[in-house]
Image 1 (cartoon, helix red, strand yellow):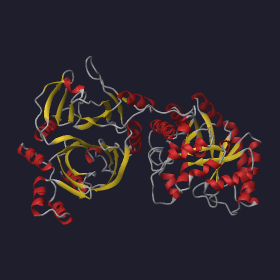
Image 2: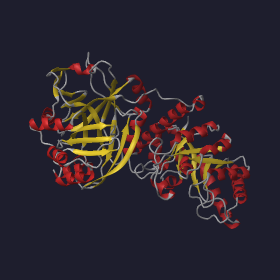
Image 3: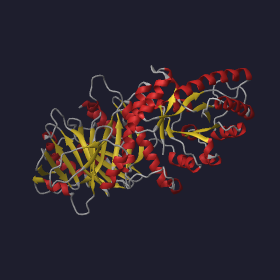
Image 4: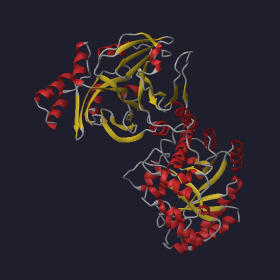
Length: 605
């Protein structure tokens, strides 16, 4: 599979963008005209740089408003096009993208548009150039790829074909089944972009909210497989207009983009066996979704405050690692690693999570194929090796072979611990990871492509400083839940971690008794205001005594058609806090009604 990316997708100068694309492993690029116009280098210098970097220059774009116009206007189109064709010759590019007319079109007639594309094709052919005609979703008359194909058929010119763009087709809800009617050799170029489903005008949606494959709501696997089945053998190219991607580091964004195409290639090859038979489509190594959370790690120069909390909540200190300044605390199947190694100046923060997987070697191979940055930890002889990767937010994510017999082997490396205490805590329920504003899409792809998690839900939670956007990723059976949260802009000079700490939620069999036992050991929960419990009394028929018990224990409460949810929080220590949850029956949510109250309580504290 040949890969390409439009230079509009990333930040920097044109030379910067070319270097970033080459570094990420792309085969070629589309040159977006404004990037060239602003470049200090001549077209010949850009072509030479691309050649040195091993990049092909696949497409020049866009040539706008070329059809559906009167004779006088079309004469101007030809003069403008000829100048661009000469420029393309200097660049060594033989394919131009021509968009359907959005500005100057006055004639709604396919025969007229076809005749003008035919004349444009004659001019282009004289320069050794082909014309890819694309129906823009907001085209004045031509806004459907099927109509664009009819016009190309009527033009009947060997140098004229179509460009198929996933955004322009799927954003309008057009059926991609019609792609089967287009011969592969007449599909001159394919542009790919994902996007969230939004209710807004399609032009603004397109210009600001496109995403890389696998990050939005479009079915790009179906779309791309139809193009492969039609016989297209050109580049799979990304054209993603996104305000975030055009502000962030181009090298990182380009690697993120290339990873998305590798994910898409794998998905097409898996879902559509006919497409997988092609020599240029390769699957990634198999990787089943994780079966559970192996451990969470809190790292700090001094973890004593976290130790105090864990002891109050009934965790058992299982000892210190035999070669590292690391402790293990457990409760049921929940394991918390406290790490003071290489942590000078660190306040407590969630540094790593471990996942249990069915085939650790396959996950390792998959991560290598996706070119994910790897985490490294020194391992001595007779110690269990943990393979890991670095998530976009900096969290280290490790994976280990799931054990069918009790605790994982690495637990035996901790010595001089205490016997396990009885506890109502059973396991890790979910891990909430706060994301930098620029990393949420990359993080989504990291977990979905690497660990086969899926986006389960998205919501906005009001807090004292604005809305917190939350996107929940889950494994198919719900054993692993990872809410990814993005904070609103915060006060200048304040650290992001102080505004939106990370947290680990532990499942328990009886939240009331756990809260009482912890308080008997000196635990002070995060205080919830009386107004919150007045609202609970109004919304749920619990009775006065039940509501008073919740208030006394500072328990949060929610109920839906599937069950109930009881939970309470610790204070924030450094940049992390803990939550303890009891799910009654089949409740699958996260107590979203409590979250705004909790955010305000944390802010107040």
